[in-house]
Image 1 (cartoon, rainbow, N blue to C red):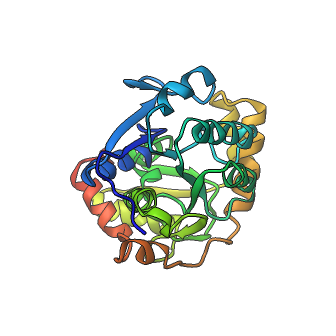
Image 2: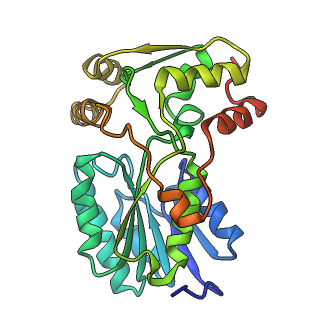
Length: 279
């Protein structure tokens, strides 16, 4: 069964983020009415301020959930579970949760949504290609050196636009994807060194990849001002999630969208053409 999307209103949390911004674009392209929620947007939403939740949810038919700073972070399951239950109380029945592939720490948050009474779909996505073009790693890429605890592990980098398109398909697909955990990857495996090299070729400049241990990376994060709890969580996340467990491809994007996922080389070329990695 497919949901009638006419007059369907979707709340998108994290609407200015790497995936959320693209969920907004994909939902609008599908003809949905979109509430783009963020801490500073017209639709105000803040995970740390529960008084903002009800107004954002009220009147929506569905919602896409992206928890910040991370779906597996301490407190995520409690907050997301409370949000999902409130959504159901307010008549928002369909929910998608952006989760992380191979992240054991995220399972409690997934269960919180699954037990909320909502019609849910979990999107377990691999490492975003856009992590190299947006967010905290961009400065290093522009500076010509990415220092990161990825070792030589292989990752099936996924384009955030594919995650967004799958999210919209799940929100509008009726019961087709209800109660499913969708495994989403890109079309091929790349090490972080290989990914940086592809970016460098596309951008026409030298960018080095410098692997470090998770603990060494944690020291740098602490120097940037992250709390001890945040650093410890991220170190543990990198030590587990980047241990090679994700070095396998899935057919999730094709099964949902009827096409293959976008290739990393196309992402790199498009961003380079836009000047994203200029020094």
